[in-house]
Image (cartoon, rainbow, N blue to C red; front, side):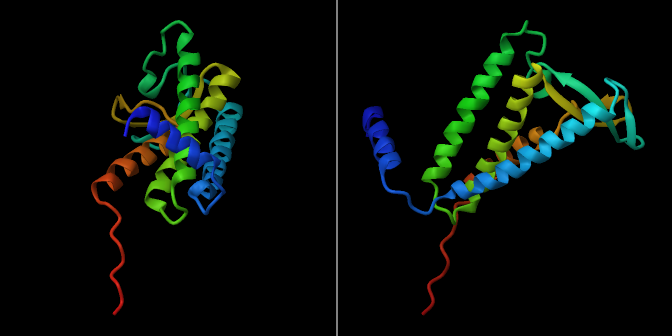
Length: 180
């Protein structure tokens, strides 16, 4: 099947009558977006920029940082264009995954859960980029003087979702044995 046939099939499916699909998992995405934004609000209102507040000595601080790039501050000093690039990418990924959820059967949690997590993370960080021009990070894990890049709830949702997508791809869902 060529690209034209594939696109026609997707458009046909999108116009077909609604059937039980996995879009109900978007409620999880919404819950995580709210949690992400609430924790970022707490960080912005209660933490001083770049000033660590110990949580577990020798391992964990709350430290407010501004990430102008992507994961691990990738492209953070690129001059400003990266805000729009990562905003567009987050929008594209979120829309594509929401459409994937629409095509996924409701009971297929092995695909729906990771997609909902990645959507939540992408939208949570997109809100920051559009609102502030950067992503608010505040979880600072470290050992000695070696710090993991600061992150937030949205980043965690993206990582967990991506890891689950990969893990679940290795072991296909097995059908239940037939009674008889």
